[in-house]
Length: 84
Picture 1: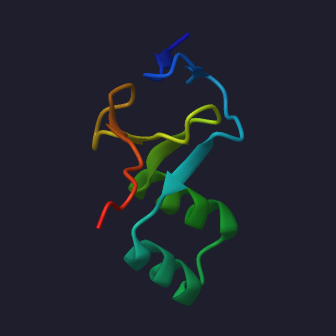
Picture 2: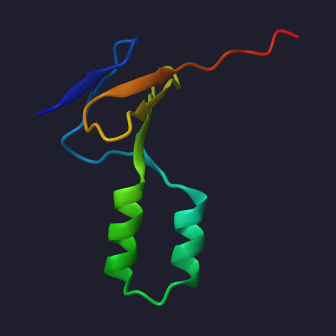
């Protein structure tokens, strides 16, 4: 079972969908879906194929963005407070 450990120690279980998992979908795909007459299942398949997983750590609020074309590699993003 693939897992990802956040820098804060939280452990994501990548083998099942959780509330921490989101999808990043290109706007163009969503616009095409709205204008499309495809069946719902076909639209979901198109959206799923074009999206990337985003994990939001419930402990520290870091974002983990799935690397394009790779199922278990993620880039880490941490919120930085504006100091200006």
